[in-house]
Length: 230
Image 1 (cartoon, rainbow, N blue to C red):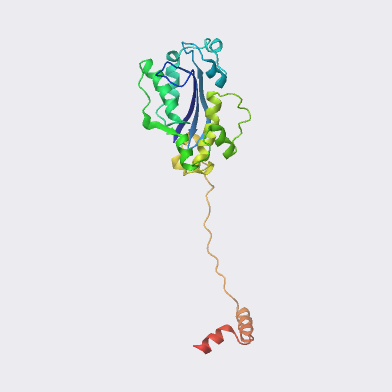
Image 2: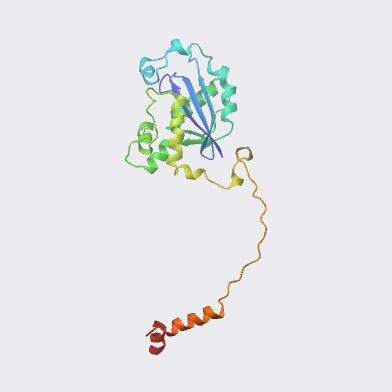
């Protein structure tokens, strides 16, 4: 099964309130294993960048102005995500910006039936605990030492590892060969084996006599006591 873990960075908290998506990072999973295929893009927001948002992700308008607007890069994004389920942390937020940008340029929104929210999974598995991405990385031993600022691709890569752990760890990716895409599996045929005639082992007359003598020499055998008591 192909899945896409993704994260976005934005100018603020509300697309409806005028905020825009400025970065998206996607990580491809196949049977819950990273394939190494990723998608990453920055977008010109066509507006200013509030300082409070810039302090979170470090992206300012002088940097983002070098990149195309979302409309110019939408086809590459849609081709990468295809029709796969989309996994995000607090997914409703990321979906609101992704679908807001899609609708703004006349494209169909991504159906929310494809949405998988790791925040809801974490709340179900660990009620009462902290459910931030940082907290979940610490819980599952995911190295985030290189995460100084938020970054869409980096956060998607961390979330991909957390997502697998939330669902039970790496063993969930182990399945029958028939469940795996042929191009990702190398099947090695075993060399033909020759059937060998069964071997029969029988005790010799001397071995039978030695066994009988041993049994007869046992004093007060257990089976004798059972027979006597019955």
